[in-house]
Image (tube, rainbow, N blue to C red):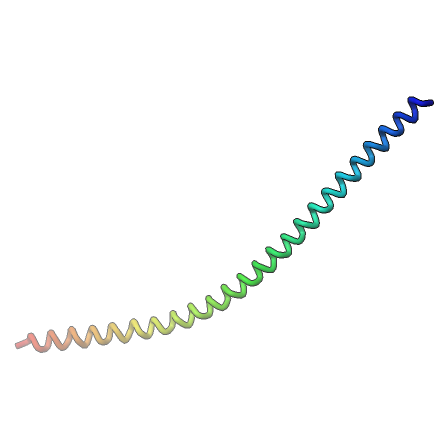
Length: 88
């Protein structure tokens, strides 16, 4: 009878150890969930910032195209003036 109680006690000890491990894993999972939520918030913030930067880049692209065309017109006019003055 005593051996049977010893086996039962051993099984209960194993069960208690398993419960402790499950609790530890549960705590780890909760921590990982919090970190995952934090990362999601950071990613959302970065996505919004990228959208703002993308709009700014598109605006600057249009402005730079206009500036580039004006510079080429000025260069073409200067080259034409130089060529006309060298005509002699």
